Amino acid sequence: MVVVIDAQIAGISGDMLLSSLVNIGANKSKVIDGIYSVEDYLKGSKITKLDFDKVIKHGIEATHLVLETSENHHERKGMEIQECILSTSDKIGLSEKLKFLQRKASDHYFMQNQRYMENLWNQYIFTKRQVLILP
Amino acid sequence: MESVHFHEASSIDTAIDIIGSAIALDDLKLFSDQIISTQVAVGGGTLTFSHGTTSNPASAILEIFRGSDIVICGGQVKEELTTPTGASLLVNLADRCSEFYPTMKIKSIGYGAGSKDFDGFSNVLKIVKGESIDEFQLDTVQILETNLDDVSGETIGHMIDKLIANGAKDVTVTGAITKKGRPTNLVSIICDPSVTNRLMSILVSETGTLGVRVRSSNRYIVPRIIVTVPIIVQGKNFTVRCKIVKHEETIKHFKVESDDIKSISESASLSFKAASDLISDEVKRRLNIK
Image 1 (cartoon, rainbow over the protein chains, first blue to last red):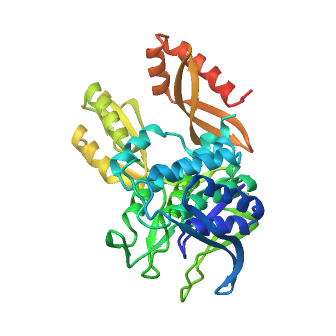
Image 2 (image 1 turned 120 degrees about the horizontal axis):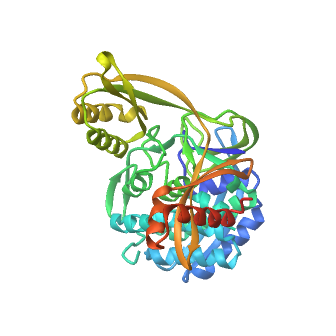
Image 3 (image 1 turned 120 degrees about the vertical axis):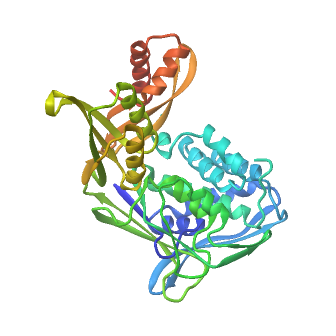
């Protein structure tokens, strides 16, 4: 099976990817419940509204993420977000494999610091596929 | 990591997008599929944030895409179309980037909306899941050939190493006889069209050859993936890179990177062959290959 992610026209943001996955058939309540666990690990932040609705954009019906949060911290350290992601994965029992994907995605996101990035690549030399195969 | 700060009040959003996407991917079992990205629209114009104004795509996005296979494209609007979170998720999910959709039967389609509305296009991400018809991937390579009849073995050895280091996919040298009974070497190089010029200069400067034949060739390749497998040899932990060929979920063939076998044989004081056999067994066990 093959999956094409088509960002040719409108680009891609985190919420667009998430919404498109819900639209193609991911279990909405499973996703929502899992997301709420994030709150426990980011002290001072609360999710005040979380849902997926349907919108029409130029004739195409698409899923849209409705998200409202309140945050006390204006700036967070990168470490906090990463710890949050890993801990949430543990809590909701996301398989080991997804934790690696998340870690890589979140590490990538934090790559404002180039030297940090280089160290990271030295450590994380797996590709996504590795996690598919490890028992 | 300690020195990296988030500047926009969107940090919990990032965690939510990443976690939510991971849960959705797990639920849909999309990890077993080959994921292909098309070109990515990055928009244009400028973006103002806590550090001032920058042009789109911003540095974070450039860094994330740097070195990856993903092709970006500016336009159609002077706004940010791709965010750092979107970029990092895509870079980690996509196995390759393709200009066109592959040969496939369509099974399901998903549309995810962005928050803004634009004139002239629908602000949605499209994902299409289907059955791939190609068992092989088709790509184009260039083949460079030349004959060398007056260079030493050492020159040839050095030339091979230098060509590989500069992007040649493969270099083969075959011995032959040419006019006047002279021994000659037929050099054949396979490479991506983007490095042809560079390799030609290397060939000319290293060997003094006066002519290089170039032709393009389509090539069917068996899709393969490279994975890193942690193994234990003599009680110590190592990791090895393996090329894996799968057919419908089962691993048909694997090959361990010989440099990794070599370094393990040195650390463990084993012969190359002994190390290779040991590592193969370990990898088979780890990957559940019969």
